[in-house]
Amino acid sequence: MPGGVKADVRTYQMYVNGEWVDSKSNKTFPVYDPATEEVIAQVPDANADDVNRAVAAAKAAFEDGPWGSATAQERGRVLFRLSEKIRQNTATLAELESRNTGKPIVEAEFDIADVATCFEYYGGLATKILGFVNPVPDNAVSLTLKEPIGVAGQIIPWNYPLLMAAWKLAPALAAGCTCILKPAEQTPITVLEMANWLADVGLPPGVVNIITGFGETCGAPLVQHPDVNKIAFTGSAAVGKIIVKQAADTVKRVTLELGGKSPNIFFADADFEAAIDGALFGVFINQGEVCSAGSRILVQKPIYKQFVDAMTEKAKKVKLGAPLDRDTKMGPLVSKDQYDRVRSYQEVGKKEAKLAFGGGRAEQFAKGYYVQPTIFYDVTNSARIAREEIFGPVATVIPFEDEKEAVKIANDSPYGLAAAVWTRDIFKAFRAVKAIRAGIVWVNHMQPTYVEAPWGGYKQSGFGRELGPWGIEEYLETKQVYINLNEAPIAWY
Ligand code: ADP
Ligand code: MG
Image 1 (cartoon, helix red, strand yellow):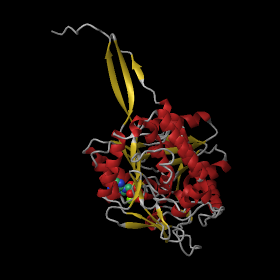
Image 2 (tube, helix red, strand yellow; image 1 turned 90 degrees about the vertical axis):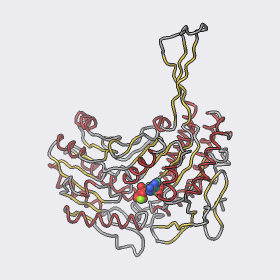
Image 3 (cartoon, rainbow, N blue to C red; image 1 turned 120 degrees about the horizontal axis):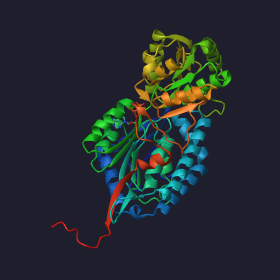
Image 4 (cartoon, rainbow, N blue to C red; image 1 turned 60 degrees about the vertical axis):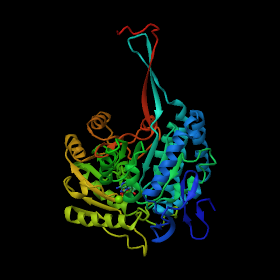
C-alpha cells in the first residue's frame, strides 16, 4: 500500500513539502467510479490554508533548497527516473485512470505511455536551454540568460488526468521551477499515486506539491497568491476568463488551454472510408471529452448524404462498455454533472437540427453515466450545438458548397484550438491550412498529438503553447546581462 493511502478506507492524503498530509480542516470529499456510480476514494478537501502551506513549501524549495542549485543534468536525470517509474507501473496507473475517468483501458494505457514519454522528453530538454550573445554595437558583451520563472501553480482538468499533470510538471521541472499542482476534483487519484515516487527519484521536499480541492476554494486562492509567479491552466473557457482576471492583481504570468469547437473538414475528393473513420474517431475518442474534439464535421455537398449515412452505420458499431473491458471503445462520461450537461445538449440538438443517431442515455447499462454516441446533421453553424463546447460524444454535421465556404464556417467560432482537413489535393489542403485560424491543423487525420510538437490555441481557445521547446519557454524568464569591456571611465562629467 503506497504512502498516501490509509489501508482499508482508501482515504488519500495530499503531498506537500515532501510529506503526506491531511487538509488543515481535516475535511475530505469523495471520488467516484462513473461506471458504477460508487465512491472509490476520499481525498483531502484543501482550501486557502492548505494553498498557503503548499506555496510556502514551493517558495522555500525554489529560493533556499537544493533544487535551486541543481544542475540541468541533475534535473534531467530526475525526470528520466520518474519516466522509468511510470513505465514500470503503466498497468496499475492505467487501470486507476480508467476506473476513475470511465475511459477505455486501452486508451488509458496509451495515455500513461505518453506520460512517461513526456517526462523523458523534458528530461532531455533540461540540458538544452540555450541563451544568446546579443550583437550590441559597443565594446561589451551582452548576454541573454534563461532562468526559471519560480513558483508555478498548475490547474488541470479531468479528461486526461495524469497526462495533463505531466504536460505541466515536466517542462516546469526541466526549467528549474517548483510547482503546486491541483488536479481536477473528479480525478485526483493517479497524480497522488505518482507522488509516491517523487522523493525516490530525487526531488527535494517542496519542489512538487499536489493539493486536492475544488476550483473556487482551492484553485482560486492558488491563482491569487502573491508568491505564485505563474499559473498554467487547462479547462473550460468560463474558468479561464476568471483566472485571467484573478491573476491580474499580482501580474502573474498565465498560460491557458481552453478547449474549442474544432472543425473537421471533408472535401468530396477525400478517401471516403478513411474519412468516415476520421470523422468518428475525431469526435468520439475518449467519449468526446477532448478539448480538440472534431465536433463540427463539415462535409462537401456531393458526398454529404452518403457521408451522414455511412457515419450513422459505423456509429452503430461503436462498442460501449465497461471501462476495464479491453473491447470497449466508449465508456461512461466522467461524472453526473458532465452526464447532465451532455444530455441537455442532446435535447437542445433535437430542436436545432436533425438527429441521425443516438440522442439519449445508453439504456443498456443499468448504472453509470453512459450516453449514446450522437450525430446531428443539417446543423447550421449558428446553432448552439455548433457554437458551444459540449465535451461529450455529440457530432454536428454541417454541409458546405466549396473551399471558400468551408473556411468561412470553420473560422466562424469564438474558438481556435484545432482543425482537420481531408482531401487528396495537396494544394487545396495547404490553402486551407493557411486560412484556418487555429493552433493545430491536421491533414488527413485528426487527434495525433506528440510531445515534440506545440499544442495550444488561437482566439478564445487560450494563449501560450505546451509541449516541445515551446512548452519549456513558458516556464522561463529572460534576463539581459551587459558586461562593459571598456576599462576607462565613461566620461559623462
Ligand atoms: P469543468 O467544468 O469541465 O469541470 P473547469 O474549467 O471547471 O472544467 O475545471 C478545470 C479545472 O479548473 C479543475 O481543476 C477545477 O477545479 C478548476 N477550477 C474551477 N473553477 C476554478 C476557479 N474559479 N479558479 C481556479 N480553478 C478553478
Ligand atoms: Mg467547472
